[in-house]
Structures are given as structure tokens and as C-alpha cells.
Length: 440
Image (cartoon, rainbow, N blue to C red; front, side):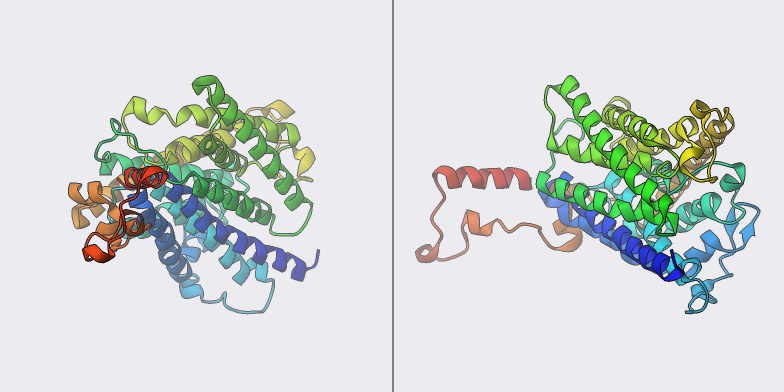
């Protein structure tokens, strides 16, 4: 493939990855209560704006600048993208690379928002997001993908972000949840998703955009991209079925929320492995991740941490599953000389050891950084909204808006009697009660 063709594919992939963040916003937004949906959408969109700016100013250089002790890139190398904003040379190693990797930084940060839904101030979230991107994502991206980064030098494999994205974000979500505390009424009060079609739509957009995430990480429109694409389909399908089976055996029903969550679990788990495993490896990784994550989302009730939308159960556990299983399932038969053989393909325990070390290191680092930053943000801004605002609705408290206008259904109670809307009855009354219950 020509440089022009590769450039076109990477630009397309960057756009697909950007779409994942609005997809994530709908996925998360459907899972919260009606009084919190706008805040959830805003947390994801806020991450897009803030992290996008930070990436262009110093983030790219921190991740991909000249190596400093294997821990971080030099942020001054390309400050403000100096030396990169040119049409000369191979754009996939310059401006296009900046654009593609910016989308990874954005969605990694946005993933954390689901864990603190319903209770974190919007300003506090933006402060945390900017600090965590700077101290959490940018350095870890260098560890994994930057020239001289210690995880890359260790020999661990992470094709598209099992450690740098999902373990990183999942562990940060856990650390931040411990600092912020539980939602008012959790876990005694039911906090059901208010809009499951939103959840399904979000999962579909995530799956669509994930092809850019995984296949785009080949940096070329070639056979490696094709392997990553096919494995992304294979593992995701297997994970969705495994999650539904686990639900059916445990609860007696297979749910739409389970299907959407299984899709995301499979996408998460195959991300580090998508270009390094064959079909059997993809099926195993997907099936294990789907079943494991379906079980893991219940751990928050057992251990008492309020991970609102199961970021820990899906992204941390799914990322760990894919990263570690790669140590067993990797095969050079699909990578044309790149990669390493895993334990099941005659490669010994070397790769498995590197995968475990990298996963544990990123998990511990990110959780600690998130806790420290969460404590700092709480001290500066208070961290979470007041109890009254949380009960009445964070959308109104933080944004002076509501996602849904129920006045038409309830009637305008301030209007003169002659023009008042008649009180609903029959089926309409049932609908109004349903809306009111959802809003509360």
C-alpha cells in the first residue's frame, strides 16, 4: 500500500475512534437515571475538549517525545506540536499520528467518568480529567508505545491499548470511586438504566468505531489491519454470547443491557491481542472475557465500592483478561515475524511473565495516581455535589438543564384554569407515572 493509502486509512481510523467517545456518552447516558443523563453526556464531551487541547500542547510530546529513563517522553520536544505541523515526509509518523493518538487519549480519560456518575461536580471532573491525563495516561502511553518506554522494552505486547487504555482507565476509576464515596441510597435503592435503547445505540457506535481503534493501530491498510479487524469481530461476538449465557444461567433471563455490556467486554479484551492471535485465540479471549466480566460486575456489591456503570468490572477486568490471555494465546503465525509466541504455542513463559508484570504495574500506578489526584480535587473543589442536588438531579444542579421535558405530559400547572391541560387518565396516566418514576 502507498503512503497515501495508509494515510487515508489512518485518518479514517482516527475519525472512527473519535466517534467512540460520543458512542460512550450514549452507552453511559442510557445507564444512568433520567435526572443524570445530561451530566453523563457532558462528562464525556468535556473530556473531548479538554484532553484534545492538552494533547496538542504537550500530551503528544509527553507520550512520544525523547525518552527520559523509560518513564516519560520529553514534553518540550514537540511543545505545541513544534516540528510536526508540516506536510513534508510521511504523515503517518507526524501529523496523522498526532491526530490518531489524540483520540486514544480522549476516550481513555472519558472511560473513567462512568464510575462516578450521578455525584461528581462537572468542574471537579474536568480538573481531575486534565490532571489524570497528564500524570496517568500520557506517561503510561509512553511506557507501552513510546520509543524507550519500559513496558515496550520489557517485551510485553499491547497492540491497541489493553494496558495503556483499559487497565489504565479501569484502575483509575477504582481509585477515584474510593475517594468520592457512594451515591446517596446505594446500594439499597434501585438505580436502573433509564433508556436501554440509548445503551444499545452506544454499544453499536462503540463497536463500529472500535474497528478504527484496533485495525487502525496497524498504521497501514495491510494484512495486519485485516487480522485485527477479523479478530475484533470474532472476540466481540463470542463475548456477547458468553455474557448472555452467564446471565441466563445466573438470573434466568438474557437482557439487552447484558448484550451491550458483553459487546464492550469483548472489545476491551481483544484490544491488546487483536493482531497477535488466531481465530481460536480470539474466540477464547472473547468467551472468557464475556463470562468473567458478567460475574465481575457484581463484585462492587460484595466489596462495597460504588462503581456506578461498571467501569472496573468491564474495563479493568476485561483489560486484565485480554492482556494476560495474550501471554498464552499469542502466535507468530498471524503476524508475519512481528510479535511473540505465547505459552500455548511453544513460546514458553517469557511473554506471559511480561504481560503480567505490565498489567500489574499499570494497574497499581493508575489507581494510586487517581486516588492522590481525587483527594487533591476534593480538597480544592469539594469533589461531589451536595446531597440535595444529588437527590433532585445533577443535571439541574450542574447544568441548569433537563434531558426530558415532562410538563406537556403533566399539564402546565401555572396556566389559568380555562387553558389548563386536562389531567391524564387511563393509558396516558400510566405513561406519566412511568416518566415521573424514571425522573426520580
